[in-house]
Amino acid sequence: MISPEVNTKSSEHSLEAMRHFSEQYAKRTGTYFCSEPSVTAVVIEGLAKHKDELGAPLCPCRHYEDKEAEVKATFWNCPCVPMRERKECHCMLFLTPENEFAGDKQEISLDTIKEIRETMA
Image (tube, rainbow, N blue to C red):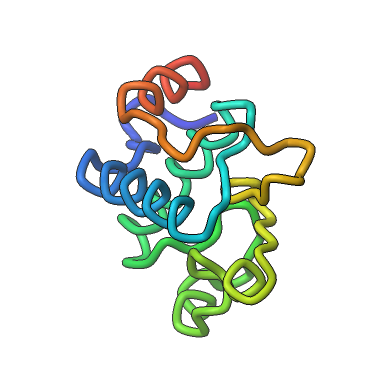
């Protein structure tokens, strides 16, 4: 169990930076966020947390033996190589329109992310 004094949330600055990046990248690539906003919010939160902890938005949906080594390798830094090369997003953050889980949104508000984060704490 995580003690209450341990901060498991990302910083406000990184959260906003990752939200903005995600919106811009979705628009630029013609992809959409998941139809379930909690998926989008949790992934953006994970990217922001990794940005705070590691200095780079390492994919939060994978297990790594050595996160620092993975950051240096850059393969799984968002947008990861599979996303850049084939539009395959393991996290379901950036979905092509034909994906059954794709929504119709390329934007999510910071307030929405925070509200979802609080319900999952």
